[in-house]
Image 1 (tube, rainbow, N blue to C red):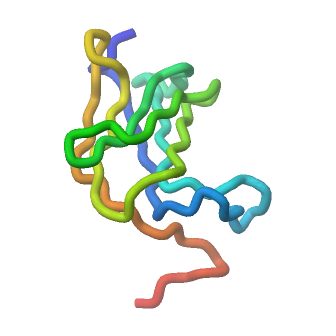
Image 2: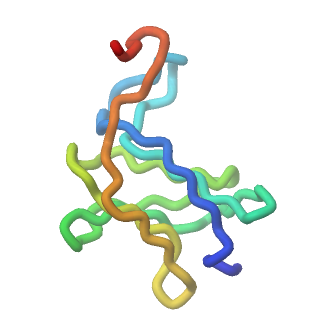
Length: 109
């Protein structure tokens, strides 16, 4: 697998692991990371981690749809690592958590 060719999409939010999403059922997680090939095929079993002040504090692995859920995260900017050292690693630095937008909690302008 060529890690340099990966596309990594982050759906960001503030940590609240035990809160159910507005659509019901699925616990809300601070970060959801989707890992795809350039052609759009998901990469399963890819390690994804949160790095806080140079230390990896949380790790998850992508599922069959290429999604990793990182539920326990600090409320400040972190780095997100995708992949593994020696096999290829993508690092997204300074990712800021935000609350998700939904119909029940719209943002005011």
